[in-house]
Length: 278
Ligand code: C2E
Ligand code: CA
Ligand code: CA
Ligand code: CA
Image (tube, rainbow, N blue to C red):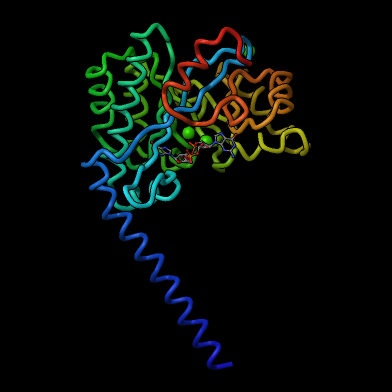
């Protein structure tokens, strides 16, 4: 028993070590990745459920690692957040997404681009400046930029965070609350902050057609959004049945694999040029 305990311990230590090493190599790689241009953005279409038209896309970062291939954000964004590198990386995403959206406008496609912000960015006193610079340098009309915040970022609603939200909103950009329904918030902030959209978390949408609780929660969030004059967005729509149910619930916008996977900007462009794809 003792020997096996020791083995377990050694195994555990080695596993920890492997994880720590992977963590360190990612951390070291992130700065180089930024300098060498190894990041790219995939865009996932967002569809207006009244018209069936693609009206915008969410920008989702990818890391095209020279040895490991495409690394999803879940494997490096948390490390970038811990190390603070999320600030320059997030700045790059913002600039690149604004540049892409401005290019869409120039090509006659008035598409909105949605960019994820991390807590660190929301706490920085220069956030409004950063957003202003990205808009000015790209020439993008602020109306076509949307910033996604999560509920959990608003729990620590310090003066700095509230001031940042007020200032970016004053620039004319749109704000949405991402992963809505997972953040244990007391909801009182929604009326006070000038947000435009609620993105209902994928966990509710995924089993909307099979789980009564998910269906009731989704219906309630859509109603609440509408009574506050907000747009209700469903993310994680994977099949036609779910899309139909969301239409019946009067949800405004949908996003998910059924409507389009994240991919190169050209794929969103093609979908946006179709008369009535959905
Ligand atoms: P998120 O903001 O909730 O983004 C939606 C995630 O759901 C994306 O994963 C997307 O590919 C995935 N998804 C979309 N439709 C479906 C569907 O129908 N079914 C399923 N199962 N999944 C779907 P992704 O691209 O791996 O991104 C994961 C998370 O990484 C994002 O979650 C976001 O929190 C973070 N992230 C991505 N890009 C950025 C960024 O530029 N900055 C920051 N701070 N975070 C980012
Ligand atoms: Ca998001
Ligand atoms: Ca989300
Ligand atoms: Ca509607």
